[in-house]
Length: 410
Image (cartoon, rainbow, N blue to C red):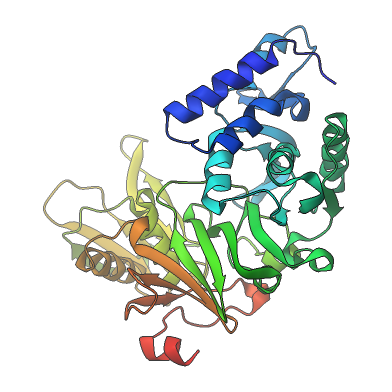
């Protein structure tokens, strides 16, 4: 076990910080935090610099002190690097991390995890969260699955050092773990663009499921669901979470890359909208992707005169694109091309969002029933709903629109 003689004091300081910032309330979870050494599970993490990713690790003369002062802070730590896609190219990037302790405690308290509950965690990672869960419900009631066998093996070794022996399995978390179902609590420490049917099927009646539902990167949030008869439903969290997307073949989607923009044949119009960085509003960005047939690329064109940021652009996988001038005048020029008038659609969705009162996460919920998943406004029987689009390998429907009558007949 990694030597860290004063870790109990460090863990106590972390507990006090989480309590003071409102991220930790339960006495049982507080006890789990102070009795579970995080440094055992994170002997090394990585930080990004101009030279690339640098390891920070225990025992290394150059980085040991930084490692020591970082472990018990309320920060996420990158713990594994691998090949990741950035745009149309592959590069080295994070493939696993130790999530911020405050996020873990908030999720555990949302699930109301209690002694005797059978819990399944999707995404073992370092194993620290499995250790917290084991403290709370008993390690014989905890199962955790991860697609990466190296992560699972390492987590098992670190857990065993603390005499904790939850059930760890290497496999595709998309399928859950049916052999040991049903579970009273499901906790996904990875993001997914669709709640797998297997998770709902393996959830006990009145069981709870907490998942970071992300249609695409930054388009979604945590949602807490409860199984009630033939429906599983609940509300989105008002906070934020940035989990890595789960690595499952069911969610493989090709990157659509750069969309060529033929400005010569573009449609020209003008807009009075001042909302250009639509991606900066999480709820609006989520609703936009409920209508879009895939991930939107976005950013700034280069200003030909200054070389700095110029017009804002959006591109869609179907080849539709738009550019919005950065003029400060009352109206701005819009150029659009491809099969759809993309800006017109984005502007319509934005206008509709405003007409609904610019709702935040606290007004949105999700219902799963008979294979359908839909987002609703204010209450489950609302007339304002949006169908959750599936990924391509899950036979995504052609449209994301779903009327109230369609929903009731689903």
